[in-house]
Amino acid sequence: MADSLGNYLEAADDSSKLLVHARLLGRVAEIYQQIAPPHLGQASTLANFKSGIMVVHASSGAVATKLRQMTPRLVDEMLQRGIECRGLEVKVRALDARPAPRLAAQKPLSVRTSQALSALSESLPVSPLRGALEKLLARAPREE
Image (cartoon, rainbow, N blue to C red; front, top):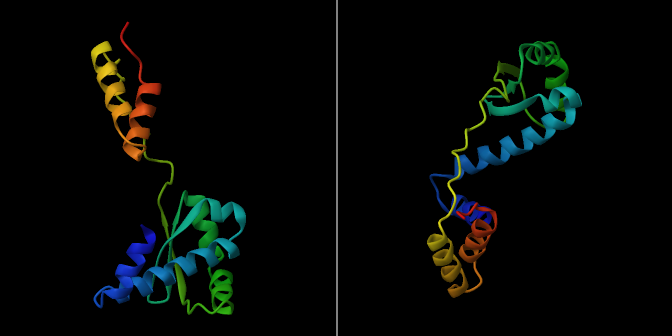
């Protein structure tokens, strides 16, 4: 799928700027992870690179402060690696602040439903749908 998306973006004239920016962003993100100290790289991500400014999301205020202090060194490293970087903008975006989604209580499958799904699964050729049905049947609780 990524291949077809890449082919589409390369073929479409209007999207050529998007493709160029996406490739640049990927390259800058890779270099950022290489040059940032490991503990800071794990606690931050490159969000964008616009007009020569790296936009980084930090997981906490402490990480953001340390990255801001390191701006001259990070910019120099980017320049040495061929990226025309003029500065660093750091924003605090807690990476783990989102609450975990609540899973609905799974209702057990009735005997009738379980039998119908089993029959359907057996009637299908080997496919992702059949695999999904088999996985559902293996994991779902059943009424007794």
